[in-house]
Length: 423
Image (cartoon, rainbow, N blue to C red):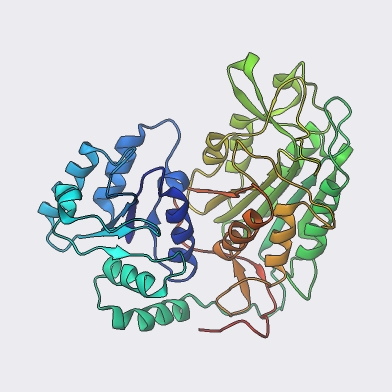
């Protein structure tokens, strides 16, 4: 199905665009193409953007400063947009002025934008501008937007399971802190894994059957143990199921191996990562064995010790890159969320029972996030919650990766909150 809208942005406007992307799917149930979430590694970026642009039903062009089009919003992209407009008269182009951007004079806009009335956001929470943006994407008058959104939310409601449990849910939860050969992580990493398993199997909240949630801590999460647990998950999770894989521990680059990225099991040897760790290619293969139509992979790695210095791996470059996460997200219904960007660390803060990312992940799974009110918490409910709250506590921004997301699928049951609005 073609995306409702292609999001065209520059580096300066990317943070604002990402915040809107969360609302497009989570609040309005609209599909979109956003390069950081959807681009496939190994393919020319420009070609992917042009393909996505030509398939979308509309294009929102985000403009900052005095109307400059920066980065990959170049002449070739503008020509592609113009060609698409000429081919189909109903195709919609929506210039969007981000908060703080002075409204540029008509002559300052690129030629292909001058004929279109822009949507101007006075602030990130400008509801009037949000409604006008949705109207432009959908090709309907703004007065009809509220009704459309309410109807989409109603159609997305799913019946609760008659058993009262999330019987289709399967999970593998891994936490490694006491590495014997690389720098150890705080005990809170193990608490993250324990807390997630306890919540997933809580019948009053997520409702996963106890036997379908496997936990590996420290020595249990050795290379052989992780491999076997992923094989077992693939064996028991069928196409109609939902599978969750959570890893809290070290990830690393090995420059000696040409920049190969690895997940570090408990028994890894930094002097022999190919023989003792799990490479990105191997992890991708293990995840591809899982036939569940809905797979969510969560990484809370590259931790800091909460004292201002990241607890990295001394012998190798700590952390995982966006390409690693994007490779794992290949395929329909496969979503990867990571706790931080590659140039950031995942924080643990004094007074919190869990790492910062996992704290808000658990909060969302307990129902302390916006949902559709039908008794489920969905993928975008989770990510919107962590993406909105984590950066308010530290210089840390969770990542989202997907390539062929056809639905905002339920991850677990959730008890509706009394204050939560229901569409």
